Length: 357
Image (cartoon, rainbow, N blue to C red; front, side, top):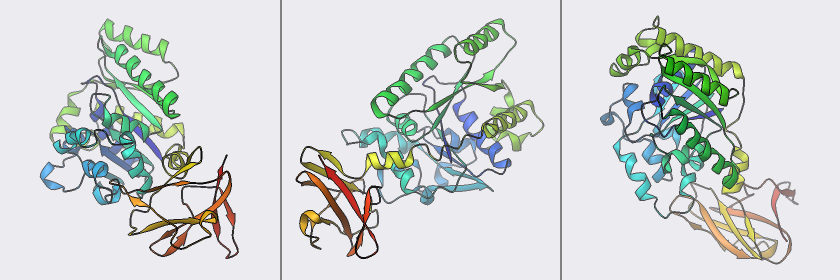
């Protein structure tokens, strides 16, 4: 599955227009598509014909309610196209998560726990690089950066690329950027010069498709439907179909890039000296205990505490060496789902393996 964020801190460049129309065009190519509205303005939700009164669960709940997953909040709009809607309540997420640990990873964690039977997940973001956008970027493998023909577009692209560099250096998370000329009138000399400058500086990242300026996008959004359905014969619909075909032709299979790698980084045992922090995701559990060679495999073991975000954690002091362990989840013995290091045991199952230096 390809997870693609739509991001640019500059407003008016067409992020929502691209996200909603591209999602529908991909669905018409028989791709299974989910669009996640990550903008408190909820414009993607409105552009797809969904009013705030028509849903009870949305993106807000994915951030703040540990037992709400994507499949609980998504709406089917047409065959192959689903939406996780958003409304003004999403603006409260940043304040609600202030001071919380790993708050920029909330969306990533929810996606890793959800059923995602899709070929594409598109995440529409607000015109800023704040907590919501950081969550989207850390949950994505690619980012489409729509740019319009304005004096500030080059600066906005540089700023966003600086953000991507920070994610690469600080988080080890590398995204594939795609620059898209959007809402573009190619007739003015300034616009042609700017397009040439983008091509010179970002040739490998610049998509071939150009979304030309068209009133049809605004008319389709007002009607609450994608332009490929509103006016299939229009230039706008042709551009969107070309964009969808260009992305599909890339044949990039990112499998929610680094999902397993990120799951292990976010969860699983973290060793610091002789202290080991155990963090595991058993969302439906009532009780989780840790046991292993260090506790003579006692069923009592060490109790884990459930955090506000639904994860279970505990800390243990362990001597240097190799330790085998398992979790006792509501009385059932289970290996650590977030640790690929394992050894067979005498019962024909596996014990998770941890080494303390």
